[in-house]
Length: 71
Image (cartoon, rainbow, N blue to C red; front, side, top):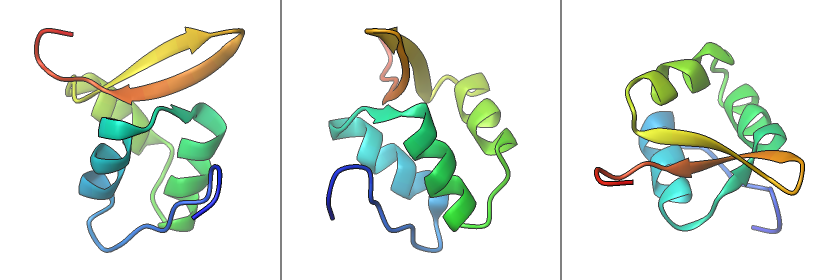
């Protein structure tokens, strides 16, 4: 695995949450990850709506991180 290259398994939500628990991902990388898993972009909206991931901006770029209670 290098840079923004992550390989999804059958449980895309668990995969993404595991990655975001330790590694913030650029929005473009998250969308690529979802696309490669055959999941729609709306998956990202669903996860932010559930308050399990958080969208944040840093240095003009959008990133996603795991949202733990108390964040």
